[in-house]
Length: 178
Image 1 (cartoon, rainbow, N blue to C red):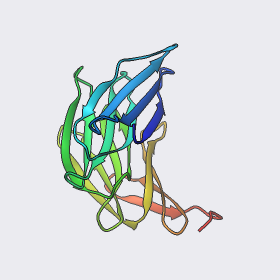
Image 2: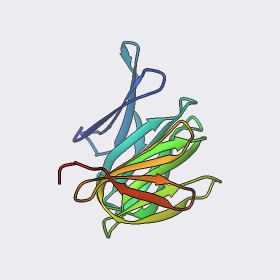
Image 3: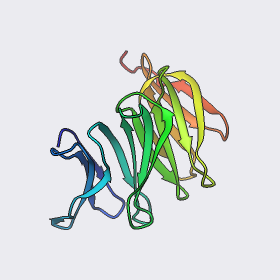
Image 4: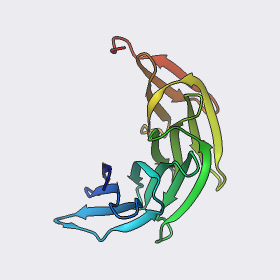
């Protein structure tokens, strides 16, 4: 494929997202034990830009990706047993997404058209979009043992944001390179 992303799952398996060399489709496979699973197509199209995947505690895969077909954040999951995609969630920049699930609900960090960090969540079956009032690149979203969301991103230095519900508390991490 033209690009690859590896993830390490809770159960010890290794996930691999890539664009296939034929049509540029976004494909996924899993290495479990000593075997690779067959490739499954996550999303079709020659302009899918891959980015990030994760496996939730129930073993279901979640993928966030960018497509130049719509210049937006897209989401896919195999929670139902088959890959289901949701496209056009928010305007975004290429390859600038990160995903995590908390209590079974996906959360995606991304960089929007104005280089602001955005946060998409789907707590009740409907996507909600929240833009942080902060510019940045390369967001990484994770949760702690209390299910609080944390964002790391770069903006003339490394920044850390913690969700306090509807707001994000953003601080600079001292002594990081600029």
